[in-house]
Length: 162
Image (cartoon, rainbow, N blue to C red; front, side):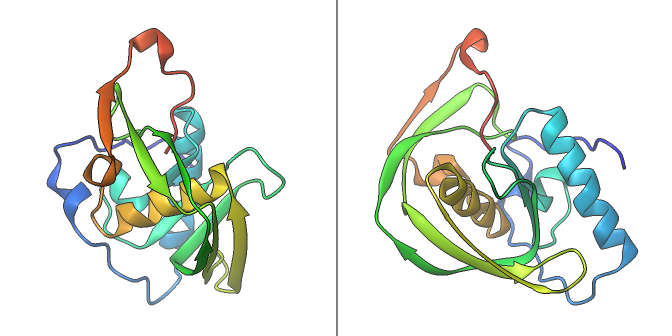
Protein backbone atom coordinates (compact mmCIF):
# COMPACT_ATOMS: atom_id res chain seq x y z
CA UNK A 1 0.00 0.00 0.00
CA UNK A 2 1.10 3.51 -0.64
CA UNK A 3 0.12 7.14 -0.51
CA UNK A 4 -0.99 8.58 -3.84
CA UNK A 5 -0.94 12.20 -4.97
CA UNK A 6 -4.34 13.87 -4.60
CA UNK A 7 -5.35 15.68 -7.79
CA UNK A 8 -6.42 19.26 -7.20
CA UNK A 9 -8.85 21.59 -8.94
CA UNK A 10 -8.71 22.67 -11.79
CA UNK A 11 -7.40 19.30 -13.07
CA UNK A 12 -9.79 18.15 -15.80
CA UNK A 13 -9.97 14.56 -14.45
CA UNK A 14 -12.11 15.93 -11.59
CA UNK A 15 -14.77 16.99 -14.11
CA UNK A 16 -15.11 13.70 -16.00
CA UNK A 17 -17.44 10.77 -15.39
CA UNK A 18 -15.65 7.69 -14.05
CA UNK A 19 -16.07 4.33 -15.76
CA UNK A 20 -17.80 1.37 -14.15
CA UNK A 21 -15.48 -1.36 -12.88
CA UNK A 22 -16.34 -4.53 -14.81
CA UNK A 23 -13.69 -6.83 -13.37
CA UNK A 24 -12.20 -6.79 -9.88
CA UNK A 25 -8.50 -7.42 -10.29
CA UNK A 26 -5.62 -7.28 -7.82
CA UNK A 27 -4.85 -3.81 -9.27
CA UNK A 28 -8.36 -2.60 -8.38
CA UNK A 29 -7.99 -4.00 -4.85
CA UNK A 30 -4.58 -2.35 -4.46
CA UNK A 31 -6.00 0.94 -5.67
CA UNK A 32 -8.75 0.75 -3.01
CA UNK A 33 -6.11 0.06 -0.34
CA UNK A 34 -3.92 2.92 -1.59
CA UNK A 35 -6.93 5.24 -1.63
CA UNK A 36 -7.69 4.40 2.02
CA UNK A 37 -4.06 5.06 3.01
CA UNK A 38 -4.11 8.33 1.07
CA UNK A 39 -7.39 9.43 2.67
CA UNK A 40 -6.10 8.72 6.20
CA UNK A 41 -2.77 10.43 5.46
CA UNK A 42 -4.64 13.56 4.31
CA UNK A 43 -7.00 13.38 7.32
CA UNK A 44 -10.03 13.10 5.05
CA UNK A 45 -13.38 11.40 5.50
CA UNK A 46 -13.65 10.08 1.95
CA UNK A 47 -11.84 9.79 -1.34
CA UNK A 48 -12.92 8.87 -4.87
CA UNK A 49 -10.64 7.35 -7.52
CA UNK A 50 -10.79 10.46 -9.76
CA UNK A 51 -9.16 12.36 -6.88
CA UNK A 52 -6.05 10.24 -7.40
CA UNK A 53 -6.30 10.67 -11.17
CA UNK A 54 -8.05 7.40 -12.04
CA UNK A 55 -11.45 7.40 -13.76
CA UNK A 56 -12.90 4.29 -12.10
CA UNK A 57 -16.04 4.10 -9.96
CA UNK A 58 -14.30 3.44 -6.63
CA UNK A 59 -14.71 5.21 -3.29
CA UNK A 60 -13.40 4.87 0.24
CA UNK A 61 -15.05 6.46 3.28
CA UNK A 62 -14.46 6.47 7.02
CA UNK A 63 -16.90 8.78 8.80
CA UNK A 64 -15.59 7.75 12.22
CA UNK A 65 -18.73 5.78 13.04
CA UNK A 66 -19.61 2.11 13.62
CA UNK A 67 -19.30 1.38 9.86
CA UNK A 68 -15.55 1.98 10.00
CA UNK A 69 -13.66 1.96 6.72
CA UNK A 70 -15.87 1.41 3.67
CA UNK A 71 -14.31 0.43 0.33
CA UNK A 72 -16.92 0.34 -2.41
CA UNK A 73 -16.89 -0.46 -6.12
CA UNK A 74 -19.56 0.98 -8.44
CA UNK A 75 -21.56 2.67 -5.66
CA UNK A 76 -25.04 3.97 -6.41
CA UNK A 77 -27.64 5.62 -4.24
CA UNK A 78 -30.77 3.47 -4.27
CA UNK A 79 -32.83 5.32 -1.62
CA UNK A 80 -32.76 8.71 0.07
CA UNK A 81 -34.77 10.75 2.53
CA UNK A 82 -34.72 13.93 4.55
CA UNK A 83 -32.44 16.90 4.17
CA UNK A 84 -29.34 18.30 5.82
CA UNK A 85 -27.57 21.56 5.09
CA UNK A 86 -24.04 22.37 6.13
CA UNK A 87 -20.39 22.93 5.32
CA UNK A 88 -18.28 20.64 3.16
CA UNK A 89 -14.68 20.69 2.13
CA UNK A 90 -12.68 18.57 -0.28
CA UNK A 91 -9.16 17.20 -0.36
CA UNK A 92 -9.01 18.28 -4.02
CA UNK A 93 -9.96 21.89 -3.21
CA UNK A 94 -7.94 22.87 -0.12
CA UNK A 95 -8.74 26.09 1.70
CA UNK A 96 -12.33 26.26 0.40
CA UNK A 97 -15.57 25.18 2.07
CA UNK A 98 -19.11 25.44 0.86
CA UNK A 99 -22.60 25.14 2.28
CA UNK A 100 -24.25 22.18 0.57
CA UNK A 101 -27.76 20.74 0.79
CA UNK A 102 -27.73 16.92 0.89
CA UNK A 103 -30.07 14.07 1.80
CA UNK A 104 -30.06 13.30 5.54
CA UNK A 105 -30.09 9.53 4.93
CA UNK A 106 -29.04 7.49 1.91
CA UNK A 107 -28.86 3.80 1.11
CA UNK A 108 -25.97 2.94 -1.17
CA UNK A 109 -25.45 -0.30 -3.07
CA UNK A 110 -22.19 -1.46 -4.61
CA UNK A 111 -19.59 -4.18 -4.38
CA UNK A 112 -16.94 -4.77 -1.73
CA UNK A 113 -13.31 -5.36 -2.68
CA UNK A 114 -14.03 -9.10 -3.15
CA UNK A 115 -16.99 -8.49 -5.48
CA UNK A 116 -19.75 -9.27 -2.97
CA UNK A 117 -22.82 -7.03 -3.03
CA UNK A 118 -22.77 -4.44 -0.26
CA UNK A 119 -25.67 -2.25 0.86
CA UNK A 120 -25.16 0.43 3.51
CA UNK A 121 -27.60 2.96 4.93
CA UNK A 122 -26.06 6.02 6.53
CA UNK A 123 -27.19 9.31 7.99
CA UNK A 124 -25.48 12.56 8.88
CA UNK A 125 -21.79 12.69 7.98
CA UNK A 126 -21.77 9.21 6.41
CA UNK A 127 -24.68 10.17 4.14
CA UNK A 128 -22.96 13.44 3.22
CA UNK A 129 -19.69 11.60 2.47
CA UNK A 130 -21.44 9.03 0.25
CA UNK A 131 -23.14 11.78 -1.77
CA UNK A 132 -19.94 13.84 -2.03
CA UNK A 133 -17.83 10.88 -3.22
CA UNK A 134 -20.45 9.59 -5.67
CA UNK A 135 -20.67 13.13 -7.08
CA UNK A 136 -16.90 12.90 -7.73
CA UNK A 137 -17.54 9.76 -9.79
CA UNK A 138 -19.89 11.81 -11.97
CA UNK A 139 -17.45 14.72 -12.37
CA UNK A 140 -19.36 16.95 -9.93
CA UNK A 141 -17.52 18.92 -7.23
CA UNK A 142 -19.10 20.28 -4.06
CA UNK A 143 -18.42 23.78 -5.39
CA UNK A 144 -20.76 22.97 -8.30
CA UNK A 145 -23.69 22.33 -5.93
CA UNK A 146 -22.87 24.60 -2.97
CA UNK A 147 -25.23 27.44 -2.17
CA UNK A 148 -22.30 29.45 -0.83
CA UNK A 149 -18.54 28.92 -1.26
CA UNK A 150 -15.97 30.56 1.02
CA UNK A 151 -12.29 30.46 1.90
CA UNK A 152 -11.21 29.09 5.25
CA UNK A 153 -8.11 30.10 7.16
CA UNK A 154 -5.27 27.56 7.22
CA UNK A 155 -5.56 27.24 11.01
CA UNK A 156 -9.30 26.43 10.75
CA UNK A 157 -9.10 23.50 8.38
CA UNK A 158 -8.79 20.67 10.92
CA UNK A 159 -9.57 17.31 9.35
CA UNK A 160 -10.75 17.91 5.81
CA UNK A 161 -14.03 16.40 4.80
CA UNK A 162 -13.93 14.44 1.59
